[in-house]
Image 1 (cartoon, one colour):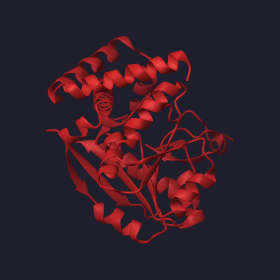
Image 2 (cartoon, rainbow, N blue to C red):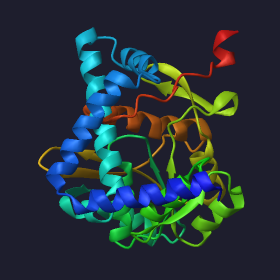
Image 3 (cartoon, rainbow, N blue to C red):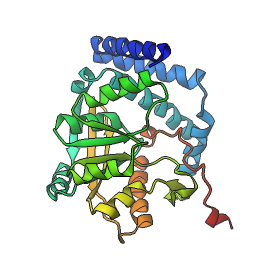
Image 4 (cartoon, one colour):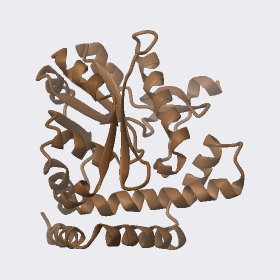
Length: 288
C-alpha cells in the first residue's frame, strides 16, 4: 500500500475503535448529524437521486420526494456508522427473521445457494447476521480503489466469518463457491451497461446484471432473495424468499428478483440507495 493508503487504513481503524467505544445512542446521534450535513453540503448525485425517486413514485408530491431523499441520507449514514462500529454495534440490534427455513431448505439440496439482494435496508447487517448464524456465505463485492479502505472494509465484513470475493474474480471462482455447497451472495441492482438484461424496474427498463441467472442456469443452484429493513426500536426485519420464475430463462429470472426488490422498496422507499444511476443505459431495442 502507498503512504496515503496506509494512512487511510490506520485512520479507519481508529475511527472504528472510537465508534465502538461510544454508546449506541451517541452513534445514532452522529449518524443523524452526518445525514443532515451531507444533505445540505455534499450535493454529489443528489439531483440524480431525486430524479430516480420521482421516476419510481410519480404519484407522490415533490415534498414527499424530498422527504424520501432526506430519509435516504439518514438511512445510509446510520448504516455507515454502525458498520464502522462492527462488531460491537451488531449486538445492539434485534432481528425479526422471516423465511430462515427457506434458506435452510435451499442449503440442504447441497448444490450451493444464490443469495440475491439489492442496495436496500442494511445489507451489511444482513451479511453479518448470516455470518453470526454460521452460514457458509461468500459475498461478491467491488474492490475499493484505495487499498487501505478496501482492507479495512474487508476486515469488517469478514469478522463474522463470511468470506469476500471481488467482483473482478473469475466466473470459475464464483461457480466454485456454489460447487463447494456454499452461499454466493450477489447485490444485483446496479446498471449493467448495454450487455445487461433490460427488465422493468418501476415501470421503466433498467439494465440489470445477468450473473445470478447465468450462475443458476449453469449450476442448478437454488435462488433466494434476502433483505434486512429497519423497523424502529433497534429492530430489523430480515426476510428471505424463494425466487420462483415462471420460466427458467435468463430474462425471466432477472425480472423475477428485480420485481421482488421493487416490491420491497415500495414498502421502505427511504431505505433504498437512490444515488445509483439505475436507468443510465438505454435499451437500444426499445428505441429503434
